[in-house]
Structures are given as C-alpha cells and as structure tokens.
Length: 96
Image (cartoon, rainbow, N blue to C red; front, side):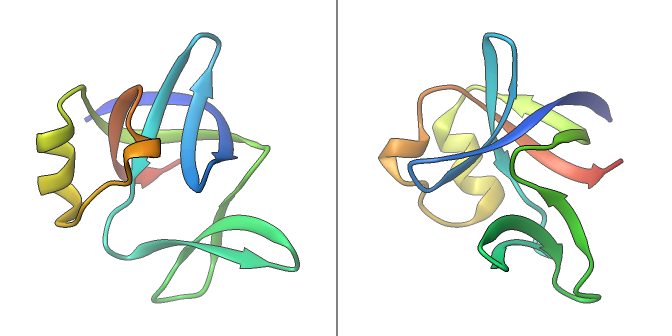
C-alpha cells in the first residue's frame, strides 16, 4: 500500500487530505465514518467508536490514489457529490 499525508480538511461537505498544492478526497473503508462530536468533524471507527482523525489536524493514511471519478464511485459503492470532485481520490486502507 502507498502512503500519503496532510491535513484533514472539511470543505463543502467533503473531507479532503490536503498537502501543499495537492488534495485527495478521502474514500473511507466501510468501518470508518465521518461524524460530528462536540461540534468538531471527526472520522470514527464505527465498530469501536474510537476517533481516528480530526479535521484541522495532520493525518497519514495507507491506501492508493485514483484520478478517475468512475473508479472512485465503485470503491465507495455510491455516488460522490459533484462538489467533491475536483482533485484526486485516496482510497484509505488504514490511518497511521
């Protein structure tokens, strides 16, 4: 698996991993989910309830990149809002 990192950013209803001029829309595994906890957007492990990442903080993820919206949709098995398409996509396998 490849590794990338940056800051987790919430913009226009999308969670991005941003590093300098690069950004990736995070495609979370089925066990991870965005949530709002005490007014802060976070990513939680749904099975354990553990907070894995917080918006505005550094994040390092394992996984892989695609630039193809069709491939990204097949990874998440759902539609991706058009406002979330505009950079690359990162299929998150795990958060370090």
